[in-house]
Length: 187
Figure 1 (cartoon, rainbow, N blue to C red):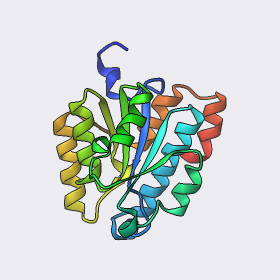
Figure 2: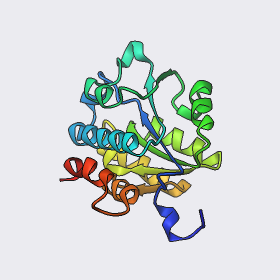
Figure 3: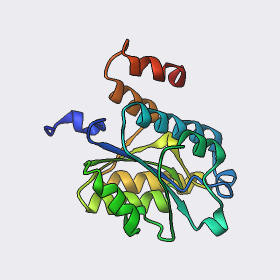
Figure 4: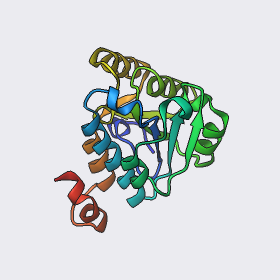
């Protein structure tokens, strides 16, 4: 992959998806959670269509519960790993699972933008990965915390994009079987 403006978009052949802590007891406390959940599910469907490796993290399950039922249904074939660390990258089993894919692009979505998503992004960037954060697929309990998390990730070098930006970057053209499979998701 050559450097240039196109590197601002994730490449489906180089990407992996990480859904961070989209859990039962935390989701209802966050802003715009229904829209965010719909976008997380779109990203999971996109990953399945293009055989993009994906991973779901769960933070302190005893306190925050499991991944929401809707996300679990969409991610039925995706590994779910529990962590106590805020950063997914600092959790050894998660880091190793992601490294095995040997993909240089990480798409991060989930909760909370200013804590676990942010710390994961910073650690991945420090490890040399290119990080993409769809701003409509991350949230926090307050608007200020979400905005601060997105700002910090962008300042650190992450590309702040949208779910549809990723969908269309992966699709590249209309009329394909993949486009038809995603059509219901983008209408």
